[in-house]
Length: 201
Image 1 (cartoon, rainbow, N blue to C red):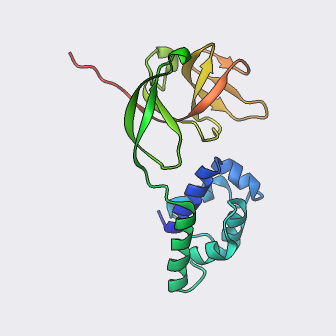
Image 2 (image 1 turned 180 degrees about the vertical axis):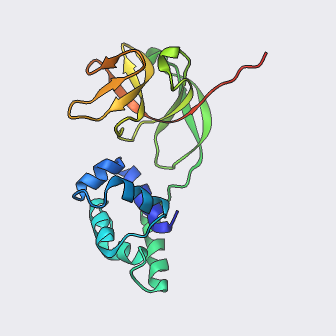
């Protein structure tokens, strides 16, 4: 991942934007797939792409252009350093987060130490019931991220938290292996990781 890619990723996460939402904000070019490639460092943004991303992410245009490589080597290094100071880095750090019960009224039942982006707000929950398939296991849920289409999400329904797949349409809805819902639910966050538990006798 390049430094400019790190900066774009960190800023997008800070603004709680999905790749699709950012692409739409800047007129659809670059598309979400190309933005992801820039964030990973697979490609370097052109001058016009860097300008559009700077505008969409509310970053200083001239510094972004320089950091994207459209300058001398010294200017690129200086600009990248300034942007990282401004935005931060998406590199994960060890964080202590709440372990929640599936019963909302029980609230926190402990804590877990996990590697997490510094700007992320999260909790951990155990999805044990088969109704949560295919997301059974200990799940990390990011609460300050907007869910994208077909992402797994933690949802509260009638005082219980369960795992569903989110469908981002004009009227969002959720589904699991057994049913589909368009109302009567609250999305608590995006599931970014599930660790399945294996029991040994």
